[in-house]
Amino acid sequence: MRITLGVTGGIAAYKSAELVRRLQDEGHTIQVVMTRAAREFITPLTFAALSGQRVITDLFVNSPSGETNLESAIDHIAVAQRTDLLLVAPATADILAKLARGIADDFLTTLYLASTAPVVVAPAMNVNMWQHRATQDNLATLRARGVRIVEPNEGYLACGMTGPGRLAGQEEILKAVEEALGGQQDLAGEKVLVTAGPTREDIDPVRFLSNRSSGKMGYAMAAAAARRGAKVVLVSGPTALETPDGVERVDVRSAQEMLRAVEARFPECTLAIFAAAVADYRVAEPSRSKIKRTPEALMLRLEPNPDILETAARGKGERLVVGFAAETDSVAENARKKLAQKNADMIVANDVSTDGAGFDVDTNVVTLFSRDGRDLPFPRMSKAEVAQRILDEVLRLRGAVRSRPASQRAGG
Image (cartoon, rainbow, N blue to C red; front, side):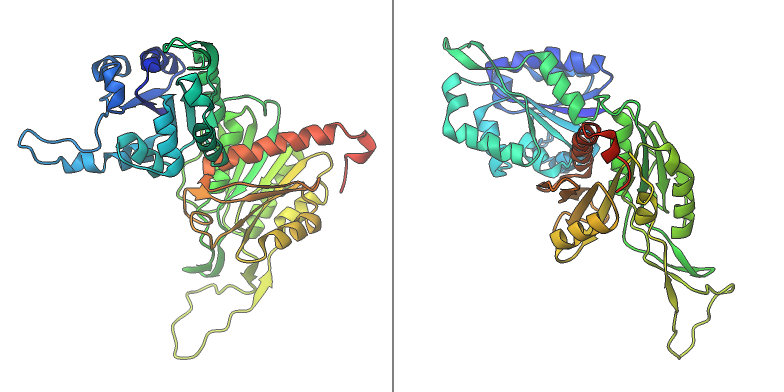
């Protein structure tokens, strides 16, 4: 994975050098970004030598002629797009405040706002600064946005005081990084079936009915499940996305093709996640030749497509079934109705008219509606992070199901 390591101005900055080496040992590529204050404690040359990468220290870099380098002016966007995770260690009270309030006055804080990747923050500071209400409020804000906080350890601090404030140990930070990347193997032994992307329903040999789905959410689900140890089969409608590592992909075109692929693979799975945006209707009688343009109105007779989620969930047995609901109004009401009608264990609902949610974007804003009555809303976050949160909730449901008597597990 490509990890961007943000180093801020605290005495613990020297510990980040060893952290670079440990992350590289795990196979990650490290891009270091330093704040101006961090350079008072350790030099960029140290990190450049360790990482083998140019260390970024300024938002704007001047050329020898004194003119601003325009490439550097948008470098934060390029780094944001190619990073898989942003890790800030150590994170000072100042940087926590800036991240929480959306202040973007240097490369690191601007990168944070431009990135949709998961974020891990490891604070280190004076005990009084750590315990101050302002710092704790900022931490609460970041946690609510999905940022993972690796809390500092207690002990003797550089300022001479004793208490919480020491940078967490490297093992703790590495564990948080791997969890944020989906590196835990808590789905080992599970066989996961995921549907993704749109379907296309032919009108004639050159035209079809479809929708705006890019498949990004379903592909994020498949990638996250595979990284967490599951054997994953991805049944995908037409999309330009690359197959996630370790995932078996089955390409389909129409809703009926997707149903056949699901019926063939569903008996083997232990968890099914239906994230595809399946067309509700198909053309009853597609033309065998191209329909020519005429001055008259064209009428198409549509007939309903099969409901893949409902069809599969009828015979789910002990399998867990997760469906998605893209809505434009009455989101909670429609999601709960779908949860009951489709015999699903969870519905992931979102309002596709909300900024930063829905089709063909890298973020989502969802609420999880579970069969046991739990409603779990999330703020806007990357689809990769949404996928992790969904799988966390799936594991909670899995534990609840297995704790019930066998006579209550099967069926609806």
